[in-house]
Structure formats: structure tokens, C-alpha cells
Length: 379
Ligand code: SF4
Ligand code: SF4
Image (cartoon, rainbow, N blue to C red; front, side):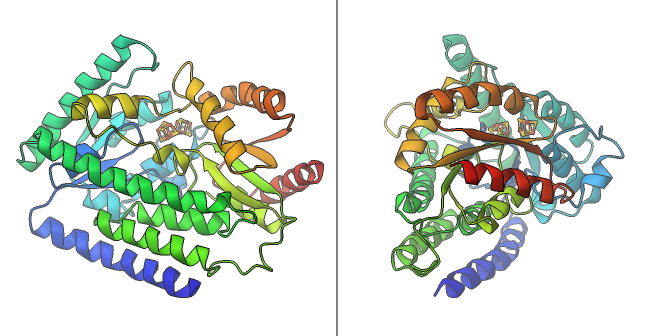
């Protein structure tokens, strides 16, 4: 049964490319996103297709390094590399790009990216707790709305925005419910399986297809279709992965944890639980979007107190035995925040934390394995 669903997912992914081509031929716009702070609802409200474009693959990095410094986050280099090599169909499909002023590397990369595609960069505030930050972000979303209206020719009124919020909340609900299956002990889904499904579902142009697929997976996991009872031995340590985003191609730490006999049961990052916050459906839709998206607990914010609250809640709810904090090489914000995260986890749960700094290459796999195995031994 598991193979049926994974085959179905593969089939849907292939069909998705054809669907997007067809939609574009019929005049639908495609909008590429690079960060969780920009509300996809604004694209959906104009019947445009939002696509996530953050690079998770090592292959295009060498080409990116011909222009960008080598000592830069692999996510930024991979993203830029896909543009330079023109090897990502989703980048090719995108009519315009939406970026945000998050970390230094990403915002400066967008200046170069604009040579390849029309790029609009939203001015993201650096803190979340002031009225000025919220008002600035709301005005940037208003600008974003006008950009999308110009691109699509669709007037994005409040009714359209509300409908888009409802649809995206349904998607968030399905994602959250899928991630929450691993609150069960032992975990019914391997972390790598969960990641693959969440990652691929994110590219589906037809949001309803993605929602149905995730709902189907939830039912199947409850039937034990993904991991038989004997494969989910109760002695496997339960690891929560926090920090930078991961995806297919940048998931080596997840795989090493599994090969070392433990499970990654939850992802406190923007590939995982940070995509599970609901937007208020009752208030002014742009206010609600500004408020919820600005609250995303990412290390580019200072302070980033929401991450500590989320981490605490997730460690408890997923019964984590240990926490691995992953930082991509040269990501200063997550790297520095790792100090406070380690102190917090130790003080709150008396739990040691493993902080890993790596990139997308495989060259340090064995070193990582040694450190991960040693950490698992300690738990
Ligand atoms: S980690 Fe932060 S800056 Fe990077 S994509 Fe996620 S929300 Fe955006
Ligand atoms: S992982 Fe860090 S350096 Fe890389 S794009 Fe995200 S915030 Fe920027």
C-alpha cells in the first residue's frame, strides 16, 4: 500500500509539470517564492500558481560559485545556481519572483537573481513585536497585492483573499495532521518519508490535490502501511530536528539519523511545523496575513522568541528524546542562535543538544555519522 501512495505521488508530480504548462498556456501566471514570510494567499487569490523555489540540491552550486562567494549558505547558492544553469522547471515556469529581505546573503543574491527573472523584494522588518513592524509588513503586503494584480490582471478584493486564506488553511490543516501522526509512539512514518511527502506536495499547482494526498497518507499511516510494527521498534530514539530548512537533496542528516537506528519524528523548521500556523479567517484578510506571516519564528528576526515557545511545545508533544539543531554553513543567524537554543533545551528539559553545521555536499557524511552516533549513545 505504501508503494501505491509513493507511486501515486510520483505520478502526480509528473502530471503537475504538465498541469503547470497547460495552465500557463491558458494564461495563468506562476509566482516563485523564496521564503515563508511571503503569503502565498496573495498569489492564490489572483488564480496564480505559487511555487517554492529554495534550492535543496548540491548540483547547481558549482555554477553559482562562479559568481557568488564560496563561503555562503548552500541554500542561497543552490537557489541561485538553478537560475544560472536554468535547470529547475519551477524557476523556468515562474513569471515573477518574490523575495524578502531576510538574511544578508539572500537579499543580496536577489539583486543578481533579478538579471534572470523579474524579482520583487519585500522589505521584511527585523523584529516582530512592534506596531511599526506590523504596519510596515502590512504596507509591503499591500504593495505585493498590487504587484500580483499587475502581473495577473485580476483585482484581488477581500473576498478573493478570504477564499485563498480558507484554502491555504485547509492545506496547513492537512500538513499539520500529517506531521502530527508522528506524535504516536513508535512513529508510524520515517522522517525521510514525511519530508518527501511534504516537500513534493509543496510543488503541486492544484492545492486540493495536495490536500487529498496528505489526507490519504494520514489514513494509510494509521493502517500501518508505511512502517510495519517490527520496523518501528519502540527503542528507537525520537529526535526533533530544528534549525534551517531541509528538503530532498539536503536531507543527509535525516538519513544518517535513521541509518543510526533513531527516528526524526518532527521538524521545527520551515519545511515542517512553521508551515502549520493558521491565518485568522474572521478579521480583515490583509491584517490577518500580515500578523500571522510576520510571526514566523525564524532566526532572521531579533529577538526570535517564538522559536523557543514552539520548540518547547514540540519537544513535549512529540515526546522527543533528543534535539539536533542544524545550521547551513555560513548561516550566521541560525549559527549564533544555536547558543541560546542549546542553553534553553538543556535548562528546560535537561537534555543535551547536538548542533551540526554542514552544507549540501556529501564530503562530511562520515564525520556527521560519528557525531550523530555519539549523541544518540548519550540519550
Ligand atoms: S529559514 Fe527563515 S529566511 Fe530561510 S526560508 Fe525559512 S523563514 Fe525564510
Ligand atoms: S539558511 Fe540562513 S543563510 Fe541560508 S537562506 Fe536561510 S537564513 Fe539565510
